[in-house]
Length: 515
Image 1 (cartoon, one colour):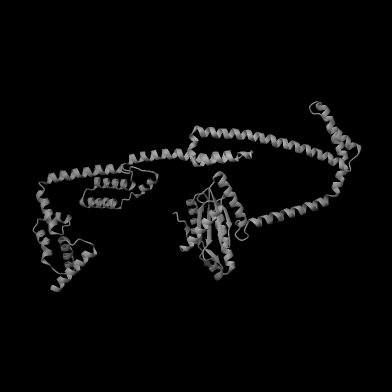
Image 2 (cartoon, rainbow, N blue to C red; image 1 turned 60 degrees about the vertical axis):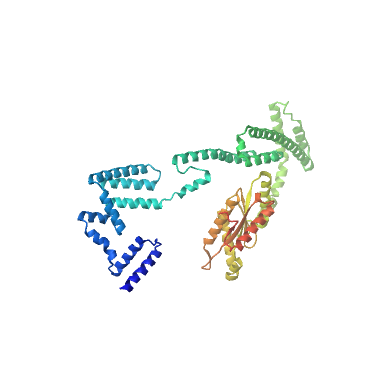
């Protein structure tokens, strides 16, 4: 028996430790008696409550069961509560008042802007109206305890990004949000309008306006809200008027040049007539008639007669030339065919020079041209861009394991993926053997990271198949932003360094990590 008690003591202490309970007399007593009961050992101290309960009348024993009394202290507390209760009518009044209070609290809860709390409150009200018993109240109590312990309002933290908010009062929080949005809406309107104004000002016949346009573009991009100022509005109006005046001058100049060109063409026609075999008297008469026409003095009938006479003479004198040209038609047709073939060959050669034959992305030569163009737009109009440098991980291992034909299939497929998910304004090029470089206009470093990481995820999960066997492929990438570097060359070098860092950190990554 002593051995059994020792085992119960040992098991009790171990259970208290396992359940992280405080080693108090009450906790020890509960655990000890529970284990003793399981082992079938009757301990007198554990039977005290049962002895005391048997001495109570039937009604009190019934009440005691609802309170789940398991210790002497709980039993004494129950008896004290019974003694303090003066009479049943007062208790009934208190219970009824508490039920009414509970209903009012639940009705107030239904007005809160929380779907789960509102539904639970409506359910509780329905239960209290039709069933007011201990079992129902205990069930509702457990439901509300579950709601309190699982309630999560962390979603409100997402509003912190917009500014300081009073989250303890819904009304005040809404007022704070409206104030923030009112301020941000003004700024966002100007930010959205500024690029449109720059775009509307950009087309211009007079190229001398480009420097002025660059100055206005820089001001609007860096301070869109300046559109609200009268000074900026006057500056834009001044620019538009100046551009219209310069465009008019440019048009006049070009028309004057065109007029001189037409005079020169007219002279060449006469020279051609003079130098051709049509040197008879009729041709000289045609020339004389053309020179004699005065549109400002001659009447319409006179001009009409002269033009008809000239047309008749030309028809007669050019018939011989037409007959000769008809004889040479086959020769001209053959020459035309040769020219078409030459144009096709030139277009094919031009396309081959700009498009990689395997991936159908741009070549490095075409990339250099596009990079220069993007850099010129940045330096003149501050149109920023980012570089994404992507490299296939362990590509040599793929070639060595599956052969170069499998490597070509993978390169071709990745080229398709890049062309599919890149925007129309993006420029995708094959930089080297298994390297690709993408120019991303009008994005910042964070957007470039998300684009590159999206490509990385797509390629990682893509099923590359070769001869019925799947080949797992991953890529690493580095990104950089032009405005954070001194030159376009340094922008490419910065992306290359980030790519090298991604490989150092284990590959299948995008650096710098801005997630």
